Image (cartoon, rainbow, N blue to C red; front, side):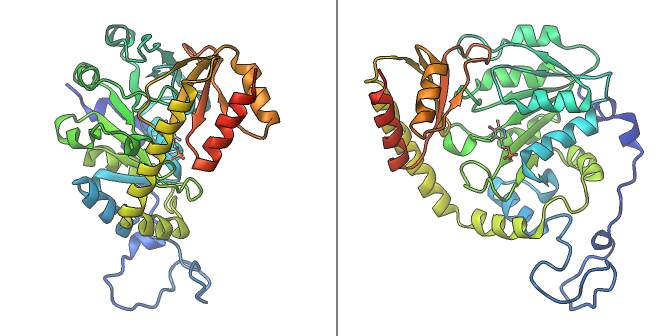
Length: 346
Ligand SMILES: *Cc1c(COP(=O)(O)O)cnc(C)c1O
């Protein structure tokens, strides 16, 4: 059985969160004179502290996902959300997490920053989790399992039944990083929230929503887990400009959907063009806005593309990714420039 009490760090359990001015008095809509936070009174749009609980934005995000605002924590990018998870649940120099390479690099970076052991269990050749190996790796001090789906850099979705098996058999937290979910036809794990008390989902406005510059990450979990994270987050971690821009964008679902559709069309066109290039050895199936490609010599091609003014991601040093390059899907023009450059290489 999962018990949040045994997962949470001892010092966090008894912690009282810092109570900011804007936490202590919440306006009910009537016009008040605010002389509580030492702000400059002259209005310029951002002279006041932002809402520490981002209520307007959370209301829309919660409604779109069919959950409650209390199931959501917002952060300065999903990178902040992931860091909060480490700090809430992983005791430095004692605890461990499990990550499944090849995958997103931040899990390992956060282990190093927070002095947490990173137990790596490689994905299979099909880029799926090796459930038995993962379950055998778990010990008393294993607090979190990170699963990225669709996975970066491979692009594939992780099998639903394998994730279910892990959620059921692991008494720690299972974080499903859904940074690329909006490009995928697969359903989000948000729908399963009520079925698994140890499930945490992270999403972001950085990819499909086209807002990498504002830094907005979304954490979705049980109200109990979110309450723990709320205790330790910096009070004003999501700034006013970000809250405003994010709200405008998430309300405009149509524009986001149109851009996603265009990106998916472009992705198909790029994949077709890649099939004609003789040194492309494999094009991996993708459910994201990028495609991983195996070539004869990734580092050589990476450098040749750089000389032509095109920057791609060389993944050759990652486990199971020898001689691979990751291409992000750009505009028609950008993708054509990539194809043209690739065809010129001999
Ligand atoms: C890009 C990406 C993110 C996004 O992080 P932000 O801090 O929200 O920009 C998260 N997870 C994965 C797997 C990613 O590839």
